[in-house]
Image (cartoon, rainbow, N blue to C red; front, top):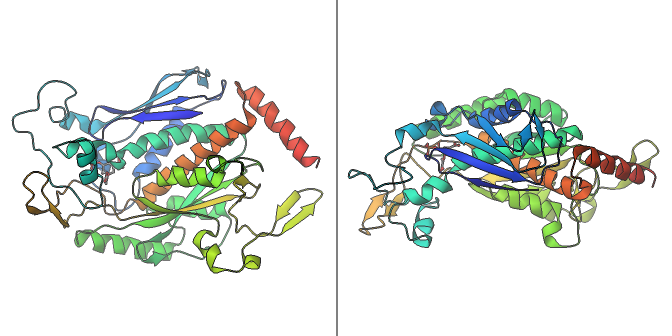
Length: 385
Ligand code: EPS
């Protein structure tokens, strides 16, 4: 199972191709659109989200609502393209009055990208480096999620920190926490903290500054045995870390206790093993975050990712002009004040993708029916142990 995405932030469209899906998987574009909508929410988003109502169009790999086993193509049209047709024209000459971006923003891909690809116009970098691209990640993840749901695997997220404000400890099951977060404008499950955070975002916007945050993604229903200890790139935790770090602005990833595990003694970290006729092997704690030795252990998978504040500041930081080398204040591109709630939705999507990929490796199958047979037979073998 693999995918590729393409598309510029202000180009005609964003595209993704997924290859390796089993046949006969029912897919609904409404469900993909719902995930795209979730990504666009959140207090603290900028002007672009008012222009776009992201919707997916599928042009291959699906017939009568079920996958064919052939590559699936997803398109998300950029509505803003109509305002950029001359400046982002695919062919022809640049317009005479083209505003070339030469003032790289600290913290963005602007400077390293312009040097690496030998671009004089930083726009050639920022168009693809933009978090706009996460719309395709969400669309791809929404396909993976529909496959996983057939096997009762569910993915949830909520924000645990925004800027200096910490949320929690929270009461209730992950389903309850996520349901509360889903209703919150900042994906925060505690209404008191939610208000504090909204006030903080307001203040930060006034100050021309930006904010990051830490989100948590929890996956339930994952069977024991996805991923492997056999090689680093087969480890499920390594693969999740790679997927989450691949999202724009993510600077850190934790699984289970994460960095806190290093601060504790072993007996306060590891999850003791119990056995019950009905449940089989189980744990009463989940410090491992559902992964031991790079393999899912049957407990919920818990990952957290830290997003840095968005680099575009309305009160810009100091920078140097790429061409004249003169000191300048960096270019102000339209941007968000805080996109951490949206990043959590992207985090869910890339997590769904990573789990689905490991799931397809384990249970193979060219058709959904074959995959179900493999899954059932493996689970009964595990239960018979
Ligand atoms: C985004 C689209 C972008 C930004 C933001 C996220 O659109 P535009 O550049 O037209 O405003 O709003 O991207 C960034 C902050 C960034 O640094 O790339 C989106 O669709 O999420």
